[in-house]
Image 1 (cartoon, rainbow, N blue to C red):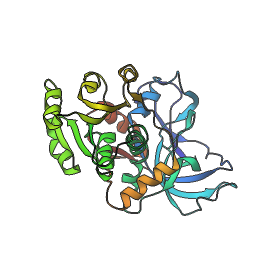
Image 2: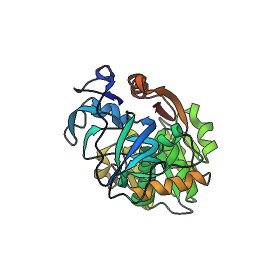
Image 3: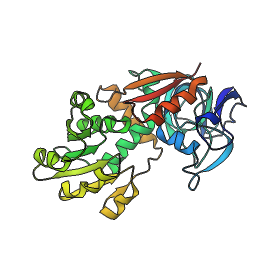
Length: 308
């Protein structure tokens, strides 16, 4: 099969488009014919070696954790899926090697859910990692509840835009930080936008004089540091971007595969409460360009890679 690989850490220049053996199928996995994958910042960070202290790399590495595709074959122990089923997955193992930037991926069933019928494969591929991050932060860590107010830092990004929609579906009021050019976009998602920069705390306090019930930080740095002062008494704080949140009395999240959470995202998408903004689409052989675009850091929405 064709796949993107790298044999050493480095920039996107180390990526190669080549023939590799098809993955072996374990008893609790399904062989997915990949229709689309999605690029996440963690992909190029892993490739650069930034996560080497926590994730072993078994070279050659096929990058990518997000996938949307069709089940080709089910392992002997699998009852959840059958050939022909359309699925999405956050196919993360405890090491990096057998990723989704390929024609096929052997995906453990714990990483999969049914693909939303109303999303294209490119849209669906952008849902798992970013959607699970937002869902697990809001539902499991912050326990956001109907009638509360949540502040989301970097609300117009890939995770942020999904967090806004999930929060709104929960009946939560959302204040979202973003650059001015993304304010109308946030309004279209149901959030009240506020600009970054000097005076941010005052702008948030004007919208929530008694404080917000929770803050979801997706950017770290100064935005995180000022967040505790914006919380109402008993307010909660979580970050996916900055471990210093622990010293501020908050919690740090690293998203994990969870089939039930992923199925909840499918249900939200199918009832029209959750959409995925696809900013750019690249063919598999141009995956290096897709990663370069992600590294640029100015893309609103998801970057998809199509296969076949």
